[in-house]
Image (cartoon, rainbow, N blue to C red; front, side, top):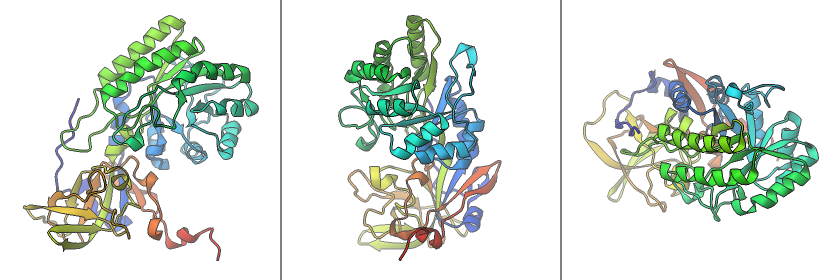
Length: 431
């Protein structure tokens, strides 16, 4: 395991690119991604047969193309994400007759994972021949009517879940996700009646879970796999790998986690008499630490005994703190190149017409503070570990344009998404 790096409260560069220069060229607020960090996180998981990126964490086309070139496949949860994967260069399905390494079955470049088919997504799956990870039994007949004879993966809810927030817990009775584990015999009958074969099994219990809870999934999956039987050729450990946000938090023991799942895979291979592909489906793990929100300080004021630093990013830019009470490290890039040596406790908020537009808040929405160098108007505040569930959850609330996105590679920053304009906000509307 490795702990989170010690955070410095003054930062002037991101991956070798000057922060003030980025803000000057692309405006603020702006999302900035470090390409080398993403590549490094992809390499961390090289022991797995398949690493499948849950692109809902960060779906910019440049990021998708980067992970594709690193050998990572992709998961899609909507018609739009299918379109993004294709636009980033992914093939819709494995080439006919393709064989996997070491006699493994070929991996599906894109997998559609959902609990329903809306009509557009079913059309897209059929049109492109995309493999489906079914989270509800009703999807089976709907798919069979359009793609008779298809193979599917079952996403199974093992009856328990975990996560950094109840809102990210994807297992147990409180979660809508997946096929309930006790319903597997009936679901298998429905698949057989529909003429579908079950070739994959997937479990995911929550986002940001700890390793002990993630490990529980292996035993649950093994039990369900035996109910499905020899048609299985792929098992997926799901995602949820934690990343350190707060000081003292640790990366997961990836070697130990893989060893646990590899043992599960080998047990099933011995039972079934054939090779099984072992997948992992990270989202946050690949991109969270690569991402930064650079935002400009526009006001500093006191409200009674509390000091506020107000910036031009709000929860329309980064929603995690208001949604989950999430902690993000922060640093200051002083406009004049000098920072006060004495830190001060400040609350950091945005421009929105909401009291909840606070980046430093505790569970329950209570305003908290952060120790930062004294800031003044014109300084840049850098919100860190913002590369997962950041831009993808941004909105146009208060009719704010979506920010630009920038990728830094080899010390060079380039624009990978233009900032929205006011004209973009009203496109498609009529009076």
